[in-house]
Amino acid sequence: MRVAVVGSGPAGVAAAATLLERGHAVELLDVGRVPEPASEALAAEVRAALGRGERPGPALYRMLRHGATGRARSPLAGLATLLGRVDPARSQKLILGSSFVWDGTDAGIPVENEVVTRSLARGGLSNAWGAACYPWRASDLAGWPISLAELEPHYARVATWIGLDQPADALARAYPLLGAPAPDVPRNPGSVLETLLTRWREHEVELASSGVTPGRARLAVRPAGAHENGCVRCGLCFYGCAFGSIWHAGQLLAALEGAPAFAYRPGCFVQGFREAADGVHVHGAQPDGPLDERYDALVLAAGVLSSLRIAADSQGLHDRDSPLLDNDLSLVPLLCAARPAPGFRTRFTLGEAVLAIEAGVVSPRPLHLQLYSFHEFFLAELGDALRSLPAALQAVVWAILNRVVIGFAYLPGADSTAATARVLPATGGAPGRVRIDARHRPESRALLRALLAHLRRLRRPLGLWPVPGLVKSTPFGFHGHLAGTLPMRAAPGPLETDANGRLSGTRRVFVADSATFPTLAAQNLTFTAMANARRIALCLDPAGR
Image (cartoon, rainbow, N blue to C red; front, side, top):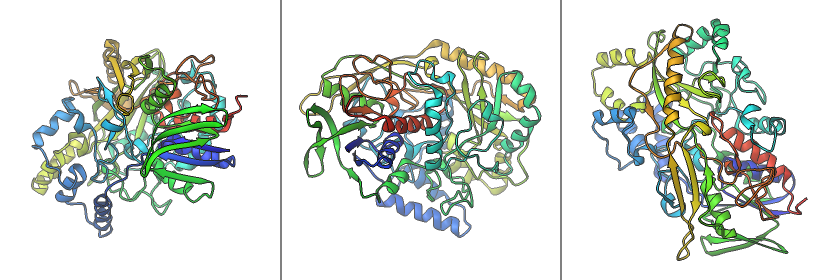
């Protein structure tokens, strides 16, 4: 069977890899933007500096943050980041000095009325993610037409693809440990979070009785020394990994490109499809002219908004509201009772620890708090200002900041911004525009206040104290954990999918990305999106059985 997969993000490559395992011929159609040569040159400069035992200097940091032509702002302007006064453009961080992850989206994925994170890059948004991977509980799948048992084996397979670093610890009580456990190795030796992980094990019973389950973060990051591209603990994670230690979908795509039955076709923009007796015809544009190809089946994994747009344009279902789910995110600075090890300097800046908050403690649904050691990235140009200070003064400032922990507090979709997305009719050959209407829920702020109050009550066993008045909520639009525009239903209607991801009204068209999610849990969705994409690819049956 010849199958087209649209989109090279995590769900797209998971579906493609699974279809290849089943013996199908797969063509992956993708816009596929890539970094400029200057970005790889910058990565090479970072690797060379670290190889010489040097810390990157101020000029290199400015290029990582602003690109080759970017200009830094005043250090005081960086304070606006923490206070939530951020313009949309500032939210789109550069990856190794390149904006390729976000380039072209206004034209290729036009959106009205809201600011929404989206990508046309090879590997999609996984080029800029935080690598957090947590499966969903059985309760998280309430309202889905499938069970956790149907997803579990696919989580385990995905864990091998992404090299999931998941120690076996108390966190398994909140999030099932699916796939092989990894050694419990500190990622940021000497940090206050390492001290807290020990403290939490000592207070495990008290925390559990208060509905809090702590543990080490589970990340799709190659551990130090475990791989030729293992983490070197340079502390530049948020700027893009120059060593490829943080997994992204482009890595699995590169592995697929060696398969004889696989073809990657970058530069292809899919506008729609048409089903006929001989298969499904996909049309759009490609580098050398119009795209018009026949396939036995089509798998849409182009992203929540693009998959919706392709489905609506192809079926003539415009001006129809579809649900749009996201996780409200708040950044919560916390002071730590512990001190870092003498001479400590942050060497790893992705998540180090997690607090899973049980249902019924703060919200009827579970909440998720990811914890990070403080890093200058959280205050934009703070690092440029610190590096201009005398060494002795730098040491004093860092002694204070190294006792700060940054919490990323995620709310589930049902407690987050209420939104709908509708595709407006295309005009003049352009893709249909997606209009988003959103209403922020007042109760989400109340939930955040309740979470902070609960953390304050547990300050002794946690060893943490939320800083009053310095909580940054999602300052505009959406955080980016988008889902739900083509949800799976037991009896799907228009612009919905069945339990196997088949688009309603079609026989040969399937949806494999998070557009199929009927609900959205608080924890990161990428692990679940890949597992569900693999499940759907194994169920794919264009005969309609």
